[in-house]
Length: 260
Image 1 (cartoon, rainbow, N blue to C red):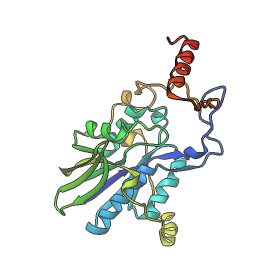
Image 2: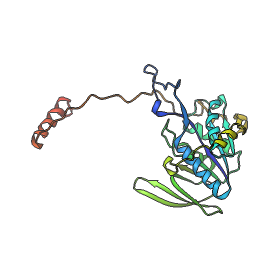
Image 3: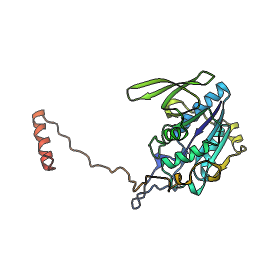
Image 4: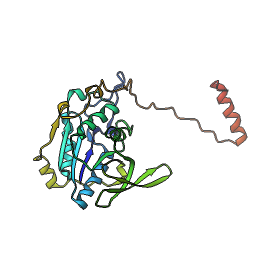
């Protein structure tokens, strides 16, 4: 079995700060991490490797500094790593990103493609499903458990708002995984040492199969006009009164704000 796991380097959102004038993210001094949902997906792939001897390839798009999460994936047990890095990929929204990743995946052999449910720096949950559409593959999202019959069929538990669904899907397919699906393994000391001896393949536009008009800023139908932090609200006023008096207070407040 050959598994490709799409991972992303993201800023640690507990450390995020925004420029109050430009409204853009201040990345300087902000630590970067492997996206938590992607790490859950990588652990799921590594568990399949442990049980069935699968080959695990990790794929990411980003600047050269994104090599750090590929080395982390090596230390956890991944076999191969590919970094998509090219100026033509810059400024991509989710659609252009998924087009770029799909272009790389067309050049790879795979039985299973795993992505995280969503990235914590965007929370769109769009890239995984879009990859499946570009490649015309079946997909299951919000995966929290996975079993394999050793042949071609995966039994998947999908989280929903009302509980969960049990689904069967045949390879090849795309799964998007929750960070809570697995507790990601720690990097071993040996794995950390060996991670820096393993080669990372760096691919540019010439290595993938995709229309140039569908990648980067030019291939992005959406733009981020402005980003801003959540404004703090003043403390509210608490009234400890009887219900009938509370009604009068609410009505007066609504009149003050010209709502009624």
